[in-house]
Length: 253
Image 1 (tube, helix red, strand yellow):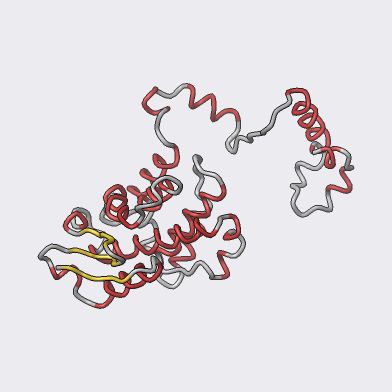
Image 2 (tube, helix red, strand yellow):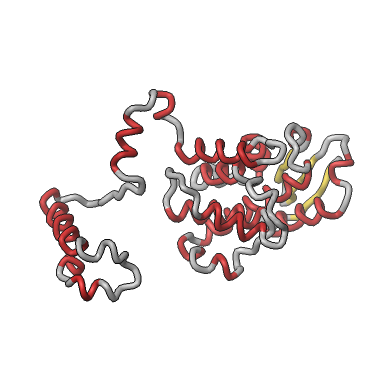
């Protein structure tokens, strides 16, 4: 900030990262903020992405709504408004959870959000469905997540629609998350991809099946309904998920 406060408007105009609308006021604003930080001896600065008015609005909400998770609440509304047959996101979340026995905390909210948004681009053309889903999720106008979580969520949805995290479209943001998060996003997307094809995105059917991991084997159990696993698509997606998890796989009917 001290560096910016010492710059002239003319020099700041040459930066491609600074809005032309901010050039004239930026040096003085930076000076004020830097002095404020020094005076208050603050260790961290938090910027509100939606402005102070959002805080005022939140203060006026009923107590139950104040306690809601803003990310999950927004994804629930969005998922219900654009999904086909309204396969409940929470139903999907419970179904894929056994795949993540040792990672129940770090990416828990992002996985739930991904489940809620996992059918948002069902009506897009297959040739660019994954790309649209990725960009749409990456740019969601919602709060409650940081940049890394936003990338995790977007990558999970991208994989859910058949995208590869090594594709050109992801290169500008994939570096914002670490290797564990990247793997978690891939596994989440592959699990969602399996769940949707297994039941045709219809509600109420996933509870007839379940995933388990036992003795190095990813098991898909379908009870006595073998019709759910007819065809090679389910087998292929189960195999892809198992390979990412470094497991064998088996279907039990």
